[in-house]
Image (cartoon, rainbow, N blue to C red; front, top):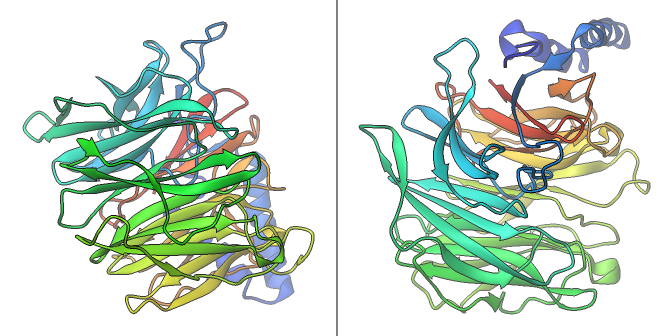
Amino acid sequence: MRLGVGVFRRSAGLPRNIRLALRLSSAGACLLLALLFAQVAHATVVGDQGPTYSVSGSATQTIKNPTLTGPESKLWYKDGRWWGVLWDTTSGSHHIFWLNQSTPDHEWVDTGVLVDGRNTVRVDALSAGPKLWVATHVYGVDGGGGKARLFRYSYHSASQTYTRDRGFPVRINSAISKTLVITKEIGHNVLWASWVEPVVPGRREVLIAKGLKGGKKWEAPFRVPGSRTVGYDDISSIVAFGTKVGVLWSDSNNGDGNRFRFATHRDRARSSNWSLERPYLTGRRMVDDHISLKSWDGRVYAAVKDASRGINVDGPILILLVREPNGHWHNAGIASNGNQLTRPVLLIDPGANELHVFANGPNFRPGTIFEKTSPLDVPSFDVRGLPTPFISDDQKPGLEVATSTKQPVSPSLGLVVVAANFMNHTYYYREE
């Protein structure tokens, strides 16, 4: 069902006006911001309402927070279509869907292709060439036994369908974790996965595992060499760039030495051969468990969150970390504490020379999915400027945790963002 379509579409010019307002005199800014809030007051839904993910009275056909978590990607594009792993309430399982953009309603269509029938798992999807990989893991913060699985599918262009490959799913690990992210070496049929797993109460390890033969055979998981234990809420993510794979994680278990940490592995080197780097500042409350990690043209980009809320009111709480091909790191603020945003999701649009960051708020709680943008070549966000509402429902303000694709987007392809609304247990999405 399409509802309230395009209230804040860029074609209407409003987001550009809002950004302009923040650069004008206070009188001009007030006038344009008043226009924004007047339109918000009359808008019921910004974006589109998709399928439900809950069935009243049924524990097996219902899932909670299906777009969790930020480091994971539920969407991808292939053959001119946007696809996603969404929850199907009829069967009580995750299925592959596609977004039918040729009809007026632009509805998500269930292909009937099963991914995982457990409503306790969350997913991370990776599309490369004719293959699709979907990792599923039991979601939890306290650890324990679980089965993280890898599903692999082949795409058939003539019928525009996916079929599961023989021998899948396979087990990646036997843990319960907050996140599990996969990546594939560029040009090689080798996968990597990363997650954080408890070892003793209050102490966790950043683990990685290598998947050979396109993920069909997994080596035993191991701790990132040279890393220390991390805190209760810490998470990790992993990305391929150039001839390397990199793991980024939060480390909040080191008192005043809290920081984000990064380790790299060169393709075809021994699995245990990793080099440690320091991508960001060290200090009290410099780290929170929010990471969205992407790569483009040999660079690594990460939208992260610190824990400075209440300490540095005017400073940034969402930060962009950038690693140059030579290994040099630099950073730029995305959003200030005053924006009250959380759970960033990063998308890269090289054709438009843009970075997009989507986050939910305000007040660091579920409500609306907001957007901040910046040039790609020289990142520079309007840190204190008003973020643009991207998906919202003022009657059901419960949107949280946006998700999209690992892939770079383009002006011709557009972008799609999906979020879950815990108030009416429904997917919401927006195309731009």
